[in-house]
Length: 385
Image (cartoon, rainbow, N blue to C red; front, side, top):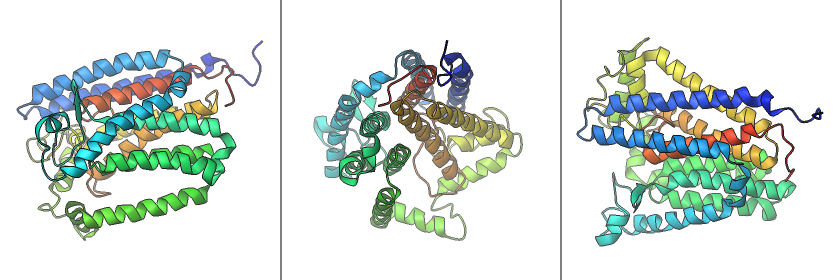
């Protein structure tokens, strides 16, 4: 007879199924909007094909990750993080040396510069290592926090080593520069430590240091400083921040029910990076307020299921891993929505599952598969550490 303290896995099955359905809806909508928002570009076929391939590969990894015992990520978390760090280091070095121009020769071929940033490395395919780091750091933090247990409250023994690793990864990503992704990594890492029991004064100290670092970065970077000044101003200056202005116009054009799929006009050269950094605006113009509400509910349900899985995971590692994965996707969606509605200054964070970016889509689907694996194994006795 099943003990009362252990619920049967069948009782949780609807949560993982609902999570899978919502994920599929978001991914399919993303493919559709990718096609609709990039048709005016010369490379629209390439972008659409890459995204479809990302969905196919991500779906395979989703199924594999969902079928595997999530404890495997605890066993290999450290090697994965080391491999990720090894990929970030050369990108950061090249970004520091060749900040304002392309690197010469084979270095420039291996680590190209696009839109003023060195964020990719060519290893057969073009890979943005920071996207992989978002998962590997979560897995390492979850494994480390579960091993430390109550010792996470110790400043020297628990907090410094874990926060030090977060700071290292954040720093490597920030110098690419990819400040928004670095900030997201830092927030998700801090969330895991908070849930694991880290002391609030320790976390507040890190927040204070991070705010000072961000203020200094904005002050020294002319583009970010200008955006900050415009954001704090009484009105939007379209000549200074064209993306924010055109994004709001897109939402206004959409009205209540939208213009219809693919019929929006902001993507026709008016809204830069419409298919990635401002995809929600394109979606809003096509589907209107009703469509945006539906999309918001999808993300709310995703996070609701993710946090339910975290709260009922069979062991602390599963809880921390689920918290990290859910927070990573939820925070990215919130920041993206805040940018396109001019609630925060313009950044470059994409909309999970939907914005163009093959590796980002693959990693989000894979991470969700891990989340489903955690959900599937609830109700079975697990280790306490």
